[in-house]
Amino acid sequence: MPVKKLISSRVSLAPMAGITDYVLRSLIREHSKTCLLTTEMISSEALTQVKETDIVKRDNNHSPISYQLSGHKPKMIADCAEYLQQFADMIDINMGCPVNKVVKGTDGCALMRNVELAEEIVKTVKSQIKIPLSVKFRLGYTFEELNYVEYGQRMQEAGADFITIHGRTRSQMYGGKADWKKIAELKKNVDIPVFANGDVVSIETAEKCLEESNADGIAIGRGVLGDPSLIARIETYLQTGKYLPPPTLEEKIAGMRDYLYREIEFRGEDVGIKFVRKFYPYYINGFSGASRYRGELVLLDNLKDINKMLDEVALQSCKNMLV
View 1: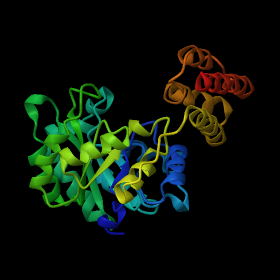
View 2: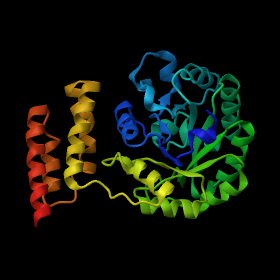
View 3: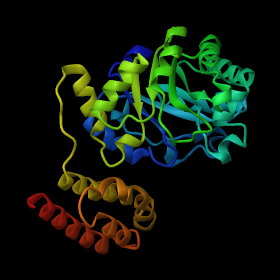
């Protein structure tokens, strides 16, 4: 499919390492049939060693879907991209991950300090794949190195078909506020589609982000945690102007249970429970005693006890709604 078709809904799921796995992507797709899904970051080094991995798992209905690769060795990334074509509708190169272990290996946002290498990666990958190629990067490595406009131009010249830009620098990590207005400057200076990323957590912030960035669409990451319906609700608003409310407390707790069951089915009970613990705060909040329940839940390691606790949480949330 051409890029315009892949991004026609104007909303995408942003890649999040260790988060946007097969289960979460499947949940998002159940709500939205048309958004562009993106996998969690896939290390080209790791994929070169082990091809048969759950990280590439997808269902037939996951299209449109982009597979994101990280690395700094052009030929290795290109070979991995060529392999992933059997699963992907688009390949995305991670040039924005800010975490230390990634940038110390010259991957992720470290590539913004090495534009020539980034160009070589894009050119090499582009020469080996037959599907669209995108790049995801930030405003710059630091506030003193805001090179996002020139960087975007050079990625386009190297062969990128699509850009997603996070409105923060690497030095900000995920703190402070995403600067959507700066993204408008990039949009003015490239001819390929641009999606804005950062701090979109509701229909209201999506609307404001698009207004300030003048982007072609938005990529949503942390906003979907605890609310896999968010992307679909934003799509509906952009297409029809209809405002669909966020999930109720009761719906969020039911969603938490469903998510837990799916991760257990995917990973096994022990690993699945441990994996889901970090998401409790996104589902169990907004009522008196929520923090206490979360504190108790993270200590539980079997499904029977967790279900019993979730029943208690659901009852408490209903009492709060009646007050």
